[in-house]
Figure 1 (cartoon, rainbow, N blue to C red):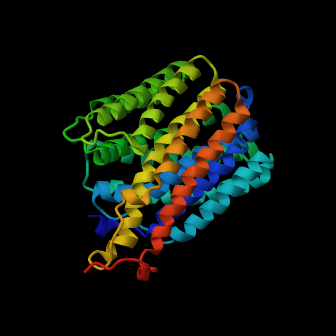
Figure 2: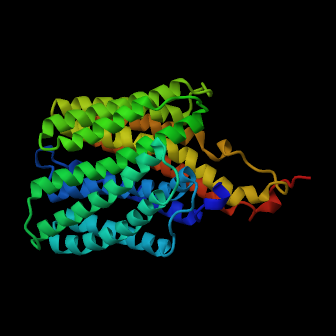
Figure 3: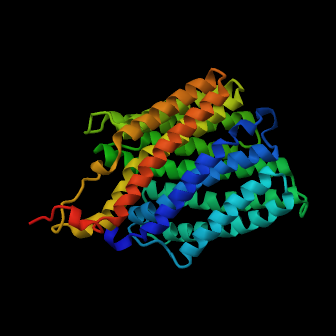
Length: 396
């Protein structure tokens, strides 16, 4: 199935690379976020650097591969996909910089280009799922996420036009809807992927998806109740709790019982999600943002980078040498010490931030990201597997 539907690795890896660059650069501006003025341009720029630059970039890259495997059909189209990747990266960083510098004219221009780039992907993603014959819960999560994505980015572009002064609409309402639909896209992708990747990597079988279905339902209810922001936020928080319980349940019933850099990151992310909800409930939004961004999202995504990227590199660049050269295992492609140190420094960063040592927290998080990038760079070395075949022992 992978052989039939695999997109070029450079496309998937390109989005991952953009995500890691944005993750690292965004940390330099995180101290600019003011919880009392979360809508300020600098705060919005930093939030977009993380959520769009890192989270959504990695998700887009992963979806080129994952959605095709789940629905058992090729991605709708990858024509112009490489050109679109370049346009996406350029417009993304330009938009974030313009927003950070409070240049609304350039924000509108680059925001429009970014919107067009994202719409190209979103439409292709939607059609990939819509035209498939898969109708199970995981496919439903992806279908809903694709619709949420198109709606969310459209609302985001309208917000940019309101800031620019090109149109006059209710900014507050647009913002609420934009946040709900964009986070909904991320939530439903993560929800669907969790029910595929965690059982696969942990060798957990025969599990129902009842907790995930509760998470699905509560998030939809949160949107229905959006006119009551506090109640809607409570429902969204409950949906996240059900998601966390589902992830922990899958890990509990996994066949591979040993703890490693993958499941430890997942467990850490799950507990950070709970603490982020608690901080948000107590109106400590700065702590909630840090724990949500770097405790939950970062750790959860990093865990899967350690699994997904080595697999894709091994499949595309190593497997052709089966029977001719001695091949590394996918596990051997991960540098264990940097992987564990990345998690340790992320944990220290979260504790430091909660203790009020903000600069130390950012520094430790930057060190954590550097260790993750070191592993990513090591994975890329295997894309040249076979070039140095004289140094490898040929298989008889």
